[in-house]
Length: 416
Image 1: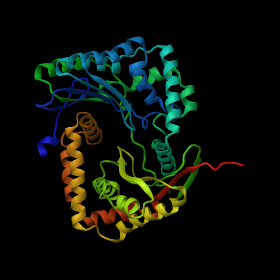
Image 2: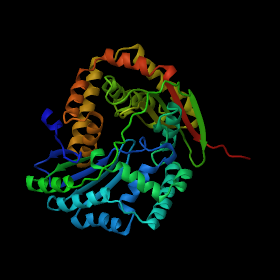
Image 3: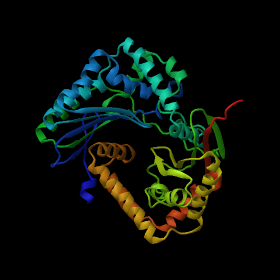
Image 4: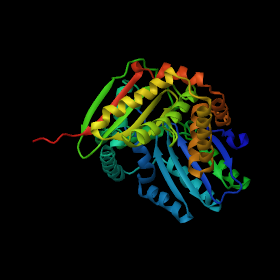
């Protein structure tokens, strides 16, 4: 198993990091380019810029639109998305079309020509997207939680930015941010699936020839010590249930406690055998579903619990979650339960590495956080060594009442 969690890593002369994960039995090939410039790296006055650039990569000119659509001519698909710490483009094609697809992805990311008319069009499209996101209560309540857990860190801002700022951004500003950040030394390429050495050599030669320069944008933000707001409640029209999100600031991905908190997230809300699923759904029937996860990056981390409940049961659901958090601090997790949670996490990791799209995400994330090809293997080894005393200690340190923030999004009352 350990060999399947390791990939080949190299750095091209122009600074581009290349990660290779071949699958001999695969029928397709996948190539991803990721630039270390996500919503956390953009200046606050440009909130939403990283996401805007992502839109412009495939839609910023007639030529770009034609190139992005041509992937389908190869029997392939392309996906572009923005995260907290990177923008990623993925192509999934037949192996014999990999070189052509790689050339297209390279041109979309490194090309610097954008058209004003397309900029204005994408501006309108993004505003529509932000309106759609604002209608999604699960996203809104998480944004509300993050705004109150983090008082200064850029993670408190939505990935897509704010409509007011999007309306004010200009094409010269976008072009400058693209030029400054989309250089090979600030990017990584991940290649997985079915490919041979000849194909690889052609692709690497093409990417080696790209000498575009730019800054390294992955600067870290100082740790916050501010106490989160204990409870924030907002009303929203058009919903029939209340949405509850309880969370706490934790630590970054490379911290020694990260694997422990990941286990806690799975123990609380990872699957039908998790504590919160059993307590809130099976025993108390206050929700249809409840989930918990530990999210983390290079300079942030937070653990959150989320569920939708009948508004009259919001307080009850909140108390049930807090009771489970307190139980982690007061009582050691039984060894049998701890082993089951470890197996759940291992299964998720291995399934992810078996999935063509998830593999690219996992590898690029591990490279961004750890910068070596053994990061996932080492992470799994750390998971295996976590004890129930480690869980109790981490829960006491990070999930105590003083560190918790609670966000509630409830239906708007009808005015008479």
